[in-house]
Amino acid sequence: QVQLVESGGGLVQAGGSLKLSCAVSGSRRSINDMGWYRQAPGKRRELVATITSGGRINSADSVKGRFTISRDNAKNTVYLQMNSLKLEDTAVYYCNAHIPSGFGSEYDYWGQGTQVTVSS
Image (cartoon, rainbow, N blue to C red):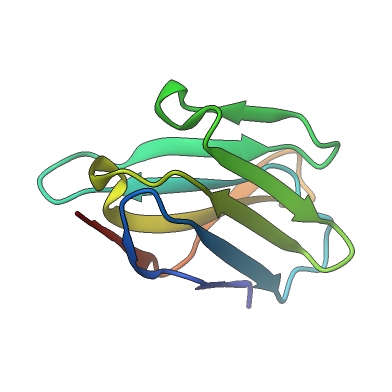
């Protein structure tokens, strides 16, 4: 049973920093893309950043220069370092992992979400 466990969310003042972690357990195969998404109240879930197994990164324009995604393949863990946080970064942040099925497709797994609240 594959599980994604997130940690590191919380309450922070605007301009502050937080680091999210997401550890994937139970996978028998190497993990392909990993990433972070977020969903604010009343809004759709949106991409924050993704990273391939080789380290290729894609990130939303709204977080470029402030957020950094990284991963440790040996630990099956993805991180999101968030600096210069803004009020509009307040959301539930979800970890995502794509794991090969062994049949030419991928399974798409999600964490339970961790709340990030930025206060003024």
